[in-house]
Image (cartoon, rainbow, N blue to C red; front, side):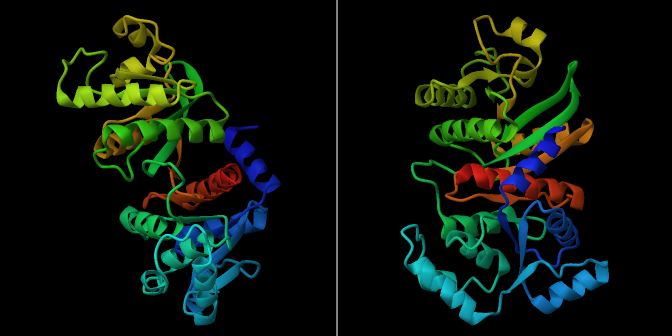
Length: 334
């Protein structure tokens, strides 16, 4: 059984309800119809029922078994707002949310916040900024979490002679220039998510243009070193190390050559923590589009409840896989 097949089986065994607010998007509709038919999850399409059904008819899809929530249904929205008002996890006031839940993305996150659904997926038609704002304003952060972040998981057919190599990379979604505290928090959350999803022990490398001070002690290098030290002190149970260049982190021979001290991570890393969002986006897409690779996520970490932000360029196959992964993450979160 392949990794993704195991994800399908886990999702089926612990079926979750997923809100899809980009309900007239072709990719989302095709993935949602197949997910529902295959028994991976219960899908709820959120938006204008007439437009949703018209799109499904245009695409030749049978969505008769999928529940549709009308984003213009005032009675339903007021009932959700009443539940949210009484929730101990309420983040923003009623008026703030009332002004925004005509937007299906905000309505979907409200449904999740009050327990109507287990998770929400969006991102093809919605910017990361808007999706994160909705989640942060309505769902809120997990207790004690320094920051939200996104973990992309890449499954490489082959890497340096190793078959079916998994690499997690973070954070290219939320933290443009993370502080030391945020950087450490991203690493810890990424390790936990990576292990929960893949079942593989995380070996986490903080990336830099420098390996163990080879690039001098500039401010960017010091910042990474401080984050490594903080993450190690907060979670001594995790294998976290750095600062490493990309090759020193991932290639065993280079790791042994460049890192002149004992390290359980150098040359063996499977979770990569980049210095900033630009580096993460570039590295992640470079790996994804120059190798035989399947990409999952980014799975968001740090929110009280799970959401998944899709790449705008994904197809229905990737969307299908991401919904299955989100179901597994939702089960882990519960």
